[in-house]
Image (cartoon, rainbow, N blue to C red):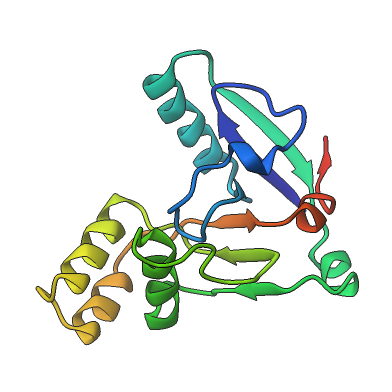
Length: 157
């Protein structure tokens, strides 16, 4: 499959040390299989940090990653388990990394979802209400690569 990374610079070599912590799945390299989503991220990053929007493409074979014994977590939808996972990774009071997966695949917690997660953690909405609201959110996709072994599964196109 083809995965895309949208940024304001071309990615020549992935450097996990440059990745920011406290994101949906933790500190790591993020991609998507939705080209338009990566293009929007490139435009957004360019607005924040200047430069030009750049899309970097990678070939990734999930079956090969499984055969190599990588620890992989897949969230099919934004459900309770996914919400708790995202909250743990975004929480600056939780020891990071909060998991030991090499690769995590699942929905993006966009601004609307992030607001819902905040409302839940601050007890403004119940867990049942959170899950109900998540079902109405536009689901996007992210592939998170957390380790050098995971990164080695990506082949730049």
